[in-house]
Length: 300
Ligand code: NAD
Image 1: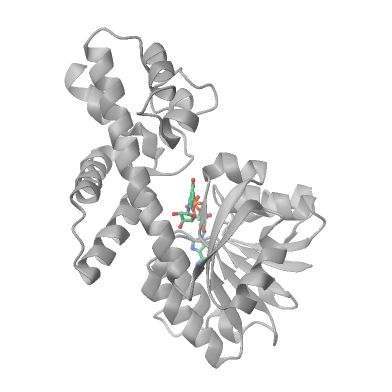
Image 2: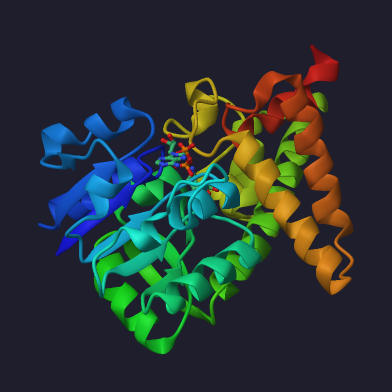
């Protein structure tokens, strides 16, 4: 399998690593050359341009920050550059695993179809730990044939691969998931902070809630209070992980979707505002669990 992997950041790096370990031939490209070169010792070919990366590939996998980056890479930027839809060989299969707005995913899918290319949106859940362990959940939007083709590649990097529906539906399901994650992380920070203020040991409180009805993903795998969970970003000065700016983006995508469907999302809107305040305080590039410090601030 000859794969071109575009976007080797916090998630792309471990995903590309697992593809290499599975024996795939992987060519990597990132605007940040150091991010791409980090994969060279593991056997990746480092391309110096997007075009060099995708030529000859039978599959392209992209893992980029947001919709604007995905549109620029697939369709070309606003300055007249051409996108990869016009660079790839005939028959190349295209997978975007970034978390972006469903409309951008549908636009890229429609433009790909015009070039007789198959494109699926396949955003992921499971974080950097899931990416390293190869246990990510993929949420695919696209045709049945696109889904089956995607499974053959994504099984090397993930454990659960779902077909959410047509183009853009993978993104929509992912947005619903991250709306819930933003709310759960905020609630977990809030409950732990309340406990600390009332004399509880946060480790003991975490153990209690893990066996009680407050149990959730953040508490189980990503405790936001420092020194409770050795491998969580909280115990590593909130080094990402999942940057707070990306959580703010995802909650914004939830609000955009809710505006279109006229759905009430008061909890998601509140979580988005908490992240907006937190990020404005200089926390954009820190892990999203650093929201815990927002709650602890009045006590410092
Ligand atoms: P990141 O910022 O660490 O990595 C993105 C990479 O894309 C960077 O290395 C950047 O240089 C590169 N890039 C940007 N524009 C480019 C272009 N035009 N051409 C080539 N490379 C380009 O972000 P991440 O944490 O790896 O997240 C990537 C996506 O996955 C985001 O949409 C995010 O919301 C989603 N996601 C992240 C996590 C997580 O835990 N980090 C979990 C699930 C989903």
